[in-house]
View 1 (spheres, rainbow, N blue to C red):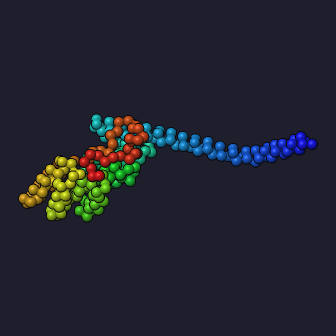
View 2: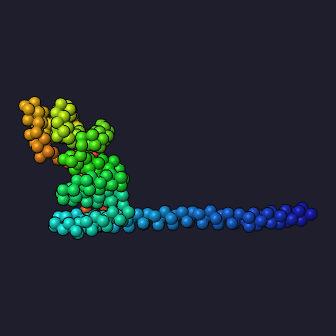
View 3: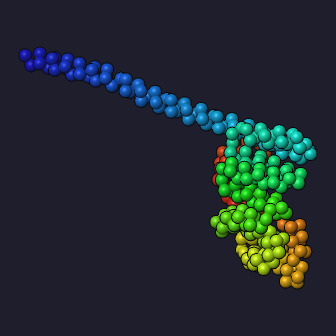
Amino acid sequence: MVDLFNEVDEELRSDRFLKFLRNAAPWATAVLALVLVGYLGFWGYKSFQDRNLTAAAIGYQKGVDALGTGDSKGALDGFEAAKKAGSPGYKALALMQEGALRAEANKPDEAAKLFDQAADAAPNQIIGDAALLRAAQVLLDTAPLPQLQTRLTPLMDAKRPYAVFARETLAMARLMAGRNADARKDFSTLQLSLNAPEDMRQRAQLAIALIDSGEASTAVAAVKAAATMPPPPVSMVGPPPASQGPDSAQSPPAGAAQ
């Protein structure tokens, strides 16, 4: 009799287990399908990103190489390809190169617009602020001082990567607008700044001396002739590793404000 009850009990357990499996199978299948779809989606997105980065790097490098040979059309074609590839970093850098070409063609407004677009596309502040600074610099000879102040003042924050370069640019703008006293204050700040490169401090010292001697116009020419841009955000030779490309965070270059 005991054996009979055990046999019945085992059959009932077996039936309940089979019923559980039948009920759970659809859910288990759905979970596995979701995991598989998620993995395939991530793999596809990563492959898509890698392809875009490679295409952008190749296009950008073609543009740079064409510039080196004086082929402006080839350069623009390469930069356009880099912009369309889908990499934010290379798009920003390509727009900056196009802006520089417009500036060389004496089209400051068009150049500034391209630099502003580069800042909007930039994936990090290093590239973005470099583009905003270049936009202000190409407008030095044409834009009114209030517009330049609006552009440059945010970049002068001590936490921004090109603060000292922005301050020097604003000092030049103030000199050109006849605001000699304000310009002198900016140059004095630069002369004492530990974040300013040595050549910038020397330019500031020269500008102060010229302003004090009543030769402010000479100071403008001297500073503009000797002023340098900060180092370019990145150096591009083919597609970089993901951790070092223009889409990743960068450390400020030497001489930039920390």
